[in-house]
Length: 186
Image: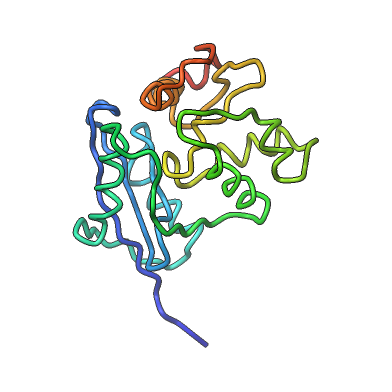
């Protein structure tokens, strides 16, 4: 039986786009596994790792995270449109299919929740797609912000509607209605 402890390397990422509030970025030896939102804390990362990778050891390692942090910086500065990072997505088979579909949405474009449900072969699972989208552990790189309502409303967003709007504007997309559920107005 293999009893090796999984190491999760992490670092902070701060940028004016997020008002210099930190995002905690984490990766295993397999790839990027988690990015928190500015509204979340290091404890969010710690709880996630305990649930998804029980017994994992969190190790602050900015040097090991340098390429990921550089690509995030380039994206936030507008000089990167696609990430070239290995991913370690942890979730159910359905969630992973949704997250994989998100990676196919081009920079500066959006899809509706219905579009994603169709793309994963479950056209009636629009609400389940929304739930999976909200559970995306690797936002920005796996672009859940590019999913909007069929009526072009921003709808909900775990990172807050302002972050969703800022990311869409960074990508040059303005074809949305700046409204959504009140609980995401932060």
